[in-house]
Image (tube, helix red, strand yellow):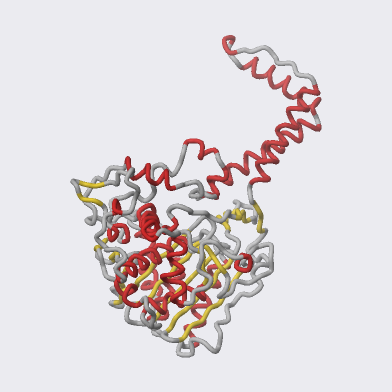
Amino acid sequence: MLISVYLILFTIAFFLILVGLLTGMLPKTVAVFNKRLYRFLRLISTEKFKRPIKRRTCVLTSIRGWIFFVLGTIILWQLPLGFIHNKHHPRFYSHHIAIPDNSLSSVPDDLKVRIDQVLSSAIKTNENIGISVGIVYGEDTASFGYGKVDLNKNLKPEGSTIYEIGSITKVFTAILLADMAEKGIVDFNDPIGKFTPSSVQTPEFNGNQIRLIDLASHLSGLPRLPNNLYKFGDYFSLSFIKNPYANYDPQRLYAFLSQYELNRMPGKKYEYSNVGMGLLGHVLAIEQRTTYEDLILNHICNQLDMNDTRIALSSEQQLRFAKGYDGIVSVPVVPIYLYCSATNWDIPTISGAGALRSNVNDLMKFLSANMGVMKTPLNKAMKRSQVVSHRINPNMNIAMGWHILHLNEHNIDVIWHNGGTGGYSSYIGFARNYEIGIVVLSNSTSSVDEIGIRILEMLICNGKTVDNGTVEKVADKIVGLEASGLYDR
């Protein structure tokens, strides 16, 4: 997690400022201390390692101190650090979530209370700054929020609050492919070499090229990330740490494709791939001679009246854009909680992997359409995107973009995806044939998967008794899948 990098840099900056300030203001005292320290070291050192005592004037010592101070200040200035002094920070100006009375009328009151408890707990533990939630229950919908969109502003998240949705973008990319195939623009079995420049040597295995459907189902054989995403100098760049995809241009993507060697047949084995889904969005945009964002707008957003799902936000949308936070860490013993405000990610080349921003209001429409509750021109493409492509394990399948989790406890398939960027986390899921769906968006990197799964199962059971063990089993399947490396946001 990037928070660990920030903590290291924060410690270095604090040390430089402290030492520099003392040295700059008290050069004579520091010079005397250094002289005595050198003498002590000479006494305990062997003759071989003894060095002459260095003599520095007070002026040189003071200059060196102020250089340290300025250097530390510059580092600290570049770190977006802040502090929360206790768990009951004023950002929690409500301890309960009021689900609108005019929505979800068919949901029992005791279930609303339990949903409220799940979200209240998530905020009180300091793991999330703000959360927006959307529930689709047949034709009923409700959206609500808790916490803050920005720790420096007294604004509560709402259904219209915009977040980075990260890898949920992949579902849009897969549905885009399904819609373009439905319209005869492309074919699922088209090789990627059909769309890339002729100078690019696309990977293949025993003469078998990667197909579009392979990219959409994480069966391409490509790794999670391209091996040339990082350059050596990037490790020393704070801007790269905060915005890792910003400088990854098409030339670097083509260079990766030309040198990468597949170690297995495409279409045979699941391996979650950011670069694979990003490549899919890239080649579809090339085929239509436009941008990935324009394709998503024309094929999906405009069809569903999703006016806040974009990559580039307008000035008005920027005002509703939640501030992202990279993480929250408790300082031992001292009741202080360290957080880092995040830089929004730019993903220009492999946008199809995670570049979209959206809100709960838009994603509830997206859910309704995917569940078939809302009839749209995309119903066929969305239904196709939910067809299983490969079995990952006994309880998990992969479709196009979507993952499908089978809940043995209820004999129900949950179609879902989650997302995460440098300052946000997200979850979207629905129960097949139940017309029940959930959207959870947060402006913190702390995962909201368990929140989404818990609420979704509560809605599925609709007030029936669900023991905590059953809920934990479902949540553990998601956590276990991520830990095993089979799935990665």
